Length: 272
Length: 279
Image 1 (cartoon, helix red, strand yellow):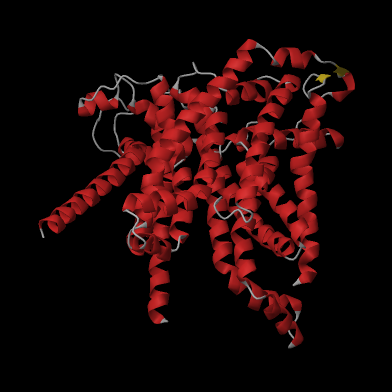
Image 2 (cartoon, one colour; image 1 turned 45 degrees about the vertical axis):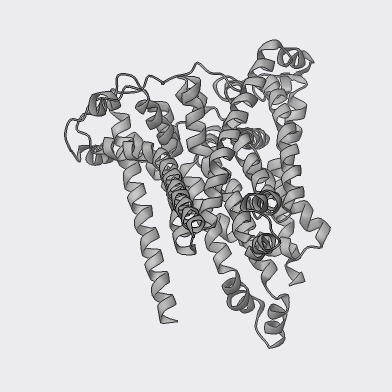
């Protein structure tokens, strides 16, 4: 099958054009005073650095990390037990329950967020029909809730994948050697499933930290996270210089995540 | 004896507790979906009260030209990008699989970038490439349907590759060479030997690609322009417009898609079971 080697070449070129090339454009843009992408009138500047390294953006960055961290922790606390319980069920039942966790993903994500927001309105459907008035719309809680609802499956699946592959003989051996159920979990099951947890953390933390639709809809435009800033620089406005610099910062973090994920899982089996 | 019975009781209580926990989490995840289904048949267009059952929105949906455009874009892009990325992804996976270890790892690393990368960064990346290339060929504003389609193909291919590679790994590489030695043409050997053994991987990749495409908002939002929208973009722009009842129509569209995917899933499983029984 060695003759198929040639097929990897177009993919390398394609990925260089669409991944490496824009990264280079961003590095260049970070040093330019530029209108849109009009390179003819662009001048060299370091003003972008002054505009980026200030108190406001620093706070936005920390806030994004904070929201993502809380979301990730909640997802582990809920997602790990679920993955564990489901992985110990009979294959047929666990298939059905897993399917139930996948199905919501076939509903448009934006519409799910929007609906969640409508359900949390104090004077809306929930109050008039069920008599439940939950005045949580626009709060920190509602933002976190939406993040957990949307990203929880991305924590469950990678953990389930590793738990399901674990050799049941290992657990039997540990019990035969006199370890209690909890000790077996702590010494055998948990360490062997950390790979899945790590993948789950990456798959939840990054989207949560960089989302701009969830904070926008759930906080009614009050909450500004890093995704909001990037959206403003590149889409609503066209301040590509500062936008690039802020994105590059984010990309540095993302590449660390990709490196870690690559080290843990060379085949990428827990990513899908 | 007493000890054993209390232990059994504890175990039973434990499994009830576990079941409750899983069901509770599922209910929370499904709350917005129940809400969408109820609102899609709610006669009160504001959605604030329940005004009786109606199928009105399912009809209105087809009369809204702007929304229909967005839906046609969403579906056509989902189908085309799934088809193209499945074919290309499978071919690329064949290529990656036959590389030596070091090059293989390097390309898999690059392949993981779009999967792990934040959608917003991928969106900006693609937008910058399209705008720069547009300028090179003298098109000032290249963003539109084609660029959105290319973007969807771009983010779908890595999932196909990731699903196909493990299956290629499991395959005996000598089978293909044996087929050639026995006089098959390369094309024949690919279709009869390689494709059947990696088929489950191809189908998984295809399903993921379709799911990703039909639901995408952020990457599409950055790579389209000139008024070309998909359903998510249409929803994001019109979510606050109560005037022409955007939300009820969105609920109706979404319910249709949900029912369709569920139906396809059930039919697929029935066919699969029948085949297994036959065997």
